[in-house]
Picture 1 (spheres, rainbow, N blue to C red):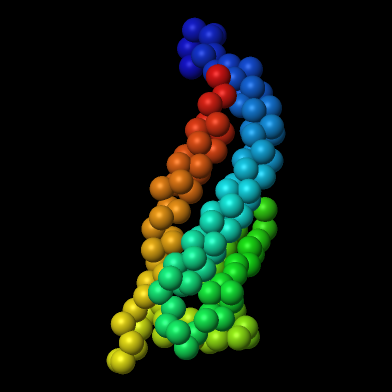
Picture 2: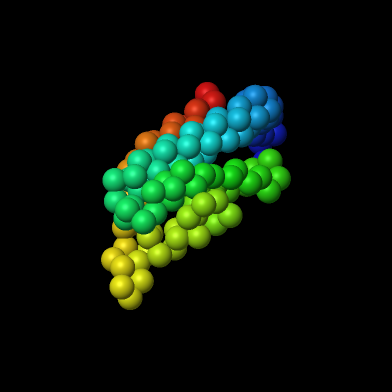
Length: 135
């Protein structure tokens, strides 16, 4: 550069660094809470749907629906939601959810997921917006 003036302002870089130091830990906590809340809502809705659609021969099936939250480092979360195959009638989950040659699919979990998705996406967008607003 000629002219002796450098248009790069390190003050902006320091402000961004301070902002990220504050918001990244908060975004991690908020994201974990949103995933946990979403998984719980899906689990509850799935069980409720299953109580309404489960055949008479599977009355215990809705109580087997649960979830696990798995963390892979600080920034990767996975919620695994569905029936516990070790629970009483939990092994019927695949047949009840997806159907078989003789049984139509119930799609209780799929409907619960679709119902929760807009709220979850809105929460993720809000967390992202908070993180990007730093001026």
